[in-house]
Length: 98
Image 1 (cartoon, rainbow, N blue to C red):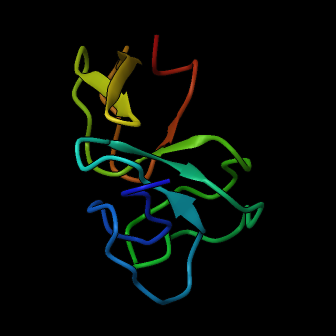
Image 2: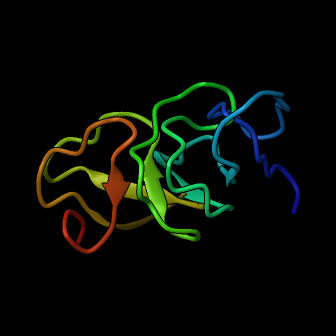
């Protein structure tokens, strides 16, 4: 997929090496990443950004703080809005996004 990255940065296409959760960010506007592994005890994304432990494979993690009411953006498209403030590295799912 053109422009896709699986690195720790939020800029698609910039490869980074390092320990942490494997994830994908497709568009530079994305404020969430999709996790691509089941490393539930790892507390950072590849590249060093924070990631809460316990987030399952395929779920979303906030790349930065997202304010209550702000759009949650994945693949460059708003997929919902934050029902409460979401911290960087927090699990983004139905409990805080509608």
